[in-house]
Image 1 (cartoon, rainbow, N blue to C red):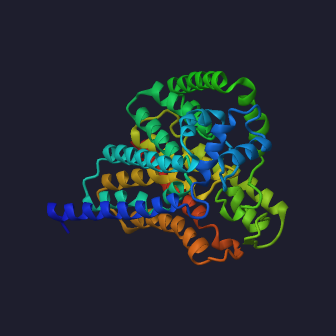
Image 2: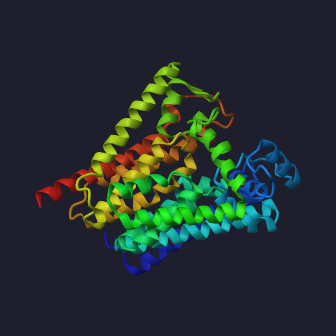
Image 3: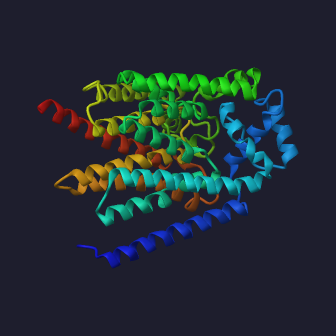
Length: 417
C-alpha cells in the first residue's frame, strides 16, 4: 500500500518520539545512576587517570584511583593506553558528570553512523527506512552500550568510515582509520589481514604507517614503560580466552561451548560437565568458521565491486567477533551495518520473498530476547539452562549465514557472467 507524504511525516514523527522516549529512559538510568550504569565508562575514566601513575595496569593503581575518585562500580581498564590518552579531557570533570557527557557523545556518533549508512544505501521505500531508523533504538546491544557507557559505538562509526572510504576509493584514509580502530580495540587488526589477503596494498600500507605513527604518539604521551605494560600485563590476561565467572554473558564461540560443557559461571546449568569437550568443540568450530570465511572471501581474490566488498567485509567482522574469547551483548552493536547492507540488497531485488525479510528479523529477535530472559524473566538472577543463554550467539550466527548465502550467490553470478 502506498504511503502518502502526510502519512510519512506522521511515521517519522512517531520514530522521533520513540527515540526521545527510549533515550530519556536510558539517560535517567545513567544519571541516577541505577545499579551498574556507566560501569565501562568509569573503567575508561580510571584508565585515563591511571596514566598519571607509574604502573597504570597494576591492581594497586586501580584501587588508588577508585579511592581518589569515589567510583563505586567499575572493572579494570582493558584497552591500550591510546584510548586513555583520548579520554584525558574527561578528567576535567567528575566521573559521573563525564558519564553523562559520554552518553551525549555516543548519541552523536551513533546518529552520524546511521546517517552515513542511510545515505549510502539510498532506500526509497519509507517502510524499510522507518524500520532501519527504529532498529538502533530498539536493538538491545545499542541500548546496553548506552547504559554501560561502552566504546562500541565509536568502533561502529570507525568501521562504517573504513567501509565508506574504501568504497569511495580513499584507500589511504581507510587504512589510517583502521589503524586508529586497532589501537583502541585490538581486533580490527584482523581487517588489516583481510586487506592483505585481498591485495589492497594502499590500505595495508596506510594501516601500517598509521599504526606506527599512533604507536609513536602513544609512546611519547604515555611513556614507553606505561605503553609496553599493556602488552606485558593486560594483553596476556585478555588473550587467555573466556573471562572467568561471566560465561552466562559471553556470546562468542568459546563462550557458547563454555556454557554447554564447562561454565565457570554460577548462573549456567551446562548440558554436561566436560572441559575437554568445551576446548575441542571451540577449536573445531573456530577452525571451521575461519576456513569457511576464507573460502567465501577467496573467489575472486581481487575485489570487483561494492557488493562483494560489503559482503566480505561483514563476513570478516562477524567471524572475528565470533572467534574472540570475550563477546558480550553490547559488542553486537557492530551488527548495525549488516542490517543496512541486507536492506540495500533487498532494494536491489526485483522479487522479495518472505524468507529474505524473516531471517534478519529473526536475528534481531534472537539477540533482543536475551535481555528479556536474563533480566525481566529472571529478576532474582537464578541459574538457567545453557540453551536459554545463547540466543544472541544464534542471532549472530544467523547473520553470518545470511551473508554467507549472499556471498555464494555473488560467486555464482560472477562465474556465470
